[in-house]
Image (tube, rainbow, N blue to C red; front, top):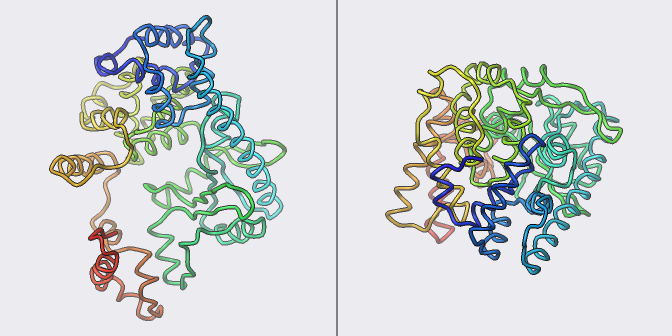
Length: 402
């Protein structure tokens, strides 16, 4: 793999983490192993490497990639730490897979259409191994019309809404559906979390329906479910990773695997991305594959690359090297960072109407909890939003609003 200047200026431990943040297909295996050997021969600080594996959540992938390199000299202490983390990741994947199968069977019995993505499903699709990708929770999508039934079905199977949840009136529920995109559950007897989506954060309702129409039926462990169309999947990965500034290498590794295997029709992906406002997220993801892994850019029209703002690549490259994924202490530097991130988000995400922007600015579910207005006075939440925000800010005693 040809190293970019960005990668060459990194520590050997960071270069090794990047090289082991995915499992390359057979056609790229030799180049991946050469990158691993080069990083190790440069003198890796193995404690730093283990910390980076934790930071980027690649325990099983990194351990698997290292084991494939014959004769690689790895300190025994580092081997034990990496194997321990890999085993824990795989055990969690087993538990997630059992719970996922249980949920899918329950939804099938209740005739609730469901789409599974990320987690063990994505790991199986990319690598043929449910335990290679680290996953914090399960992610399922249902239609908005099926959301209430899906919630009831989950509760019957022992899943409970997070303790921060509270009952909403009909008008509050309608506003919640319009402004948010998922419900969070935890299992009452297992240490497992589940996010139930009815749309993607950046989607219009039309785009959500179109994704369902393009989805493909599949079966996993005897359970029927829907799979995203390959183009929808790659756009989801690019936009999800882009929203978080790609601060975890494992997300970029997913995209690298898809690209290196030649699974994606990038011209078709670009055409759809232009229709849905995800063009910049897609192109930025591809540029990052070039910078981080040395993967060649696909053949796309020249004008596509010319319209990509450089900030959409610069910010993720900085985020990948950051020691911590979230924010900075309050300082002049952090304020400058936040301004750049605000600009980054505006450039990345599809443009929204002023009505959408104002509506989301004035929405906070916490307002419904602070002040339980009857639905006949629902309109009053908008003008009262600043007052309720200030009340929470004062009560917190920290000066940190929501």
